[in-house]
Structures are given as C-alpha cells and as structure tokens.
Image (cartoon, rainbow, N blue to C red):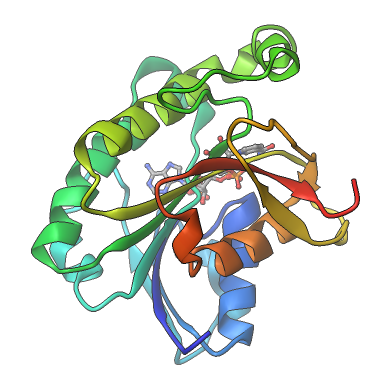
Length: 220
Ligand SMILES: NC(=O)c1ccc[n+]([C@@H]2O[C@H](COP(=O)([O-])OP(=O)(O)OC[C@H]3O[C@@H](n4cnc5c(N)ncnc54)[C@H](OP(=O)(O)O)[C@@H]3O)[C@@H](O)[C@H]2O)c1
C-alpha cells in the first residue's frame, strides 16, 4: 500500500490503538481526533502522528481534519452514550458532507457483527445472540444499524466499507481475518489486533466498497 494519511476516529479504543500502531509501523500518517491525548502517549513523539483533541459530538474544525486525508477510519463506541442517543449516526451525518466538500471518498466504519446490515437480515444464530447475551449493547447496535441505513440510502457516492467485527479479546493474533459475504454469516470472534489489521488491509480493497461484511479467520 502506498503511504497514506488516515484520519482516525476512535484511535484510543480497543481496535483503534492497534490500528494506529500498525499504520505507523507501515509508514502511514495518522491524524486522530481523541478525547484524551494521554491515551496515545506511548506512540509520541512521532512525526507521522497528528493528535487533535476533541469529541465527535462537537467538532468545529471537521473540514480541517478531513481535508488532505486519503481515507477515514472510524472505530468509535460509547455504549452508555449510545443507549440514549445515536451519537455515531449524528457524527456520520456530518462527516459524509464534509468528505464531499473535501473530495475524500473512502471511509471504513467498524460496527459489530451483531448489528444488522441495511437491507439484509442477520443469520438466525447471530439474531439470537443479538437478542439475548448481547442485549446490553442494544444501543450500540441500533446506532450502528442507523449508520448503515444512512450510508446505504444516502451516501452511495462515497466509497464506504462497513466492517461488522466480532471481538473477544486483546490477546495475540489468532490468524488472518478474511471478509465474509454479508449473506454467508461466516463470523469469528477475533482479537482487537486482528480486527485492526483487517481494517488497514480492507480499507484499500475496491471489492469491499458498499459492503457490510463480517470477518472470519481463514481456516475456521
Ligand atoms: N469491543 C467489542 O467487543 C466489539 C465487538 C464487536 C464490534 N465492536 C464495534 O467496534 C467499534 C469499536 O469498538 P472498540 O471496542 O474497538 O472500541 P472501544 O474500545 O469501545 O473504544 C471506542 C473508541 O471511541 C472513542 N469515542 C467514543 N466516544 C467518543 C466521542 N464522543 N468523541 C471521540 N471519540 C469517542 C473512544 O474514546 P475514549 O478513549 O475517549 O473513550 C475510543 O477511542 C464499535 O462500533 C463496536 O460496536 C466492538
């Protein structure tokens, strides 16, 4: 992959931290909006890491952040905020027009594997998990689903990719994650590290554009 500038939202999170570290290791530039810059202290100083302090709920300089980036990657989550309000959806509805204004076309949005893609249904076993053990995350899934609906209905001019990740631990790599067709329902509970590696790889894939795929370990 040629060196790129990634604008990252959620850079201090479980997946985001690994994404930042892997992107920097591969020679990319990372521009990150974070609420607490201290959380990225282990990566600084690094000339290829630009840290901006702020919240997705109030970004006065969104166009400045978006301008000049090659790809945008969001690995955002705030389960308690998303219980009361669709904060990610509100943010994506600001981000997409900003991308249009700044001629940035590629976006990867990480959702959950149990979030239902727009215009498709969940396989029965994922539907069951979503409505039983994962009920605590209902707000997050509803928000992710509203994002997918908005992207599907109103952002076909943007090269968006949704990764419906399954994540279970922050341990060592469990292997290489592959993209699964939305309808197949193949799904692995992966590590944050592997999901980050997948995001960094798949954001470049032309075939992944306008998909809301889950990911699974090769050979699983
Ligand atoms: N964790 C899982 O088991 C799991 C499984 C499958 C799918 N997913 C999905 O993957 C996505 C990311 O999950 P994750 O577990 O990697 O993330 P995470 O550890 O929950 O971290 C979320 C990230 O979002 C940031 N964030 C939240 N609200 C923000 C705001 N208002 N302004 C700026 N940044 C904000 C957090 O910043 P702070 O550091 O400041 O809090 C953090 O960097 C979510 O959509 C989630 O549904 C997660």
